[in-house]
Length: 262
Image 1 (cartoon, one colour):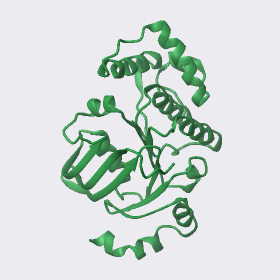
Image 2 (spheres, one colour):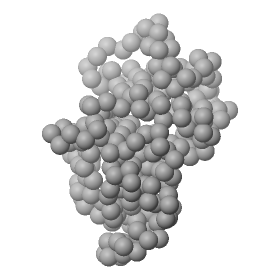
Image 3 (cartoon, rainbow, N blue to C red):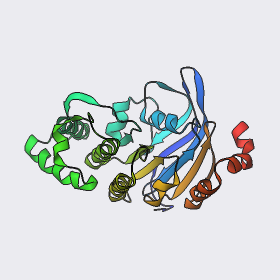
């Protein structure tokens, strides 16, 4: 939902970043306001997932220059857990399995860490159980998954539902979804998309990274950005994603050749 007067949640200016000494991001610019849903599309290796990890503060990715501000605050020096408690949530393309740690305990610890960072008291076990049962409805997830080890033995769709369950519980200001549609069948895609749509509201924002237009049939973006060679080379509305689906990337890449090779 575009509202020009909304608060700027995320501002990225001329962001450069490296992985193992190789420059991947070569000047990314992006502004995200409250209430907006953005989709970032691009070929493999264009820098989409690197961008998501740099925003989340992943230690394997080094920001070498530029600026990232979140709700007006420079977050470049913040650790990943500090960004998370500030309100940035990253849903992984490949969620990790944590054998021996129950999903319920993992979610309770994460939830209470957020409460503690906000100066609130930790929620006790009984109240948390009531809350998590309510949140399960967002992703239509069976309560039995709460007592299994985190993501261990989960199908691809169940792992993605579990990611959105975390999002429902933590209520982040900025949700970054890295190829959330990857590996989902059509029913799981609809369920996950329905959860994201329920959680999107005028005070938060979503940045989705995806290869395919099909996700955008269920989560309609306000803006679609095309990334190539570590930069956003063009921006449009949902029609841009539809054009990519129909024509592929080659023509758009050719139209913006100057930006790609700059």
